[in-house]
Image 1 (cartoon, helix red, strand yellow):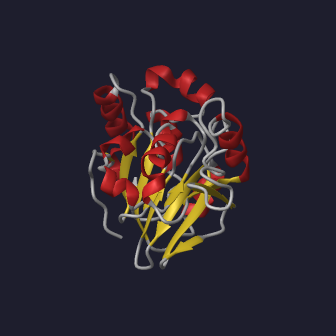
Image 2 (cartoon, one colour):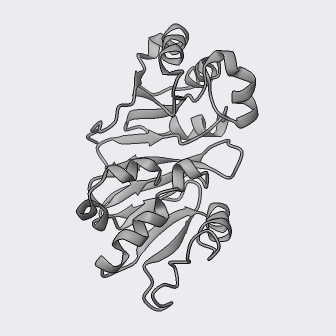
Length: 234
């Protein structure tokens, strides 16, 4: 998710849709968690535009996620450590640890890590522009703490929530700490704010079935599938 021109939320394969000139403008990447579908293009992003920039790209994540990224991604075995390349004094990339509930403010925009419940340490994010907010849950299973925080957001306008599996894979959703329509219903009934709901992270090959089940389960929330290149104004 590209915020304005200079902030990315996660760095999955969608980053490959951006032109090099667009990549060079990105100053901050906020990572929800360490799984490859959310981090796989981070090394390529830094490698492609690092030498074009006059300051490091800042990678924001919780301490637990940064530890995983350091140990398993930028570890010199999987990929070089760009936090010390080309020199430790002037690297292409640097890290910034985030904490739940503590806003990172960038040019008046507040990015707040929110609780999530996944198989690795994970967060969602609130993007707060002042007049309104967007919440992106990231990958999560059932998470009461998330709804406690969401319901405190008075200017909530958009909610982007995952639903990775159809109901026929309920057990797999529970095991992998994702949502299916039955679990999604149990989550959305906790929502106390009036927001437009968008569904993401649908598994290829099950999109039509899952959206049909979502319509049957939580149609009253009028959920829509998140589209590529979709624009949100907050």
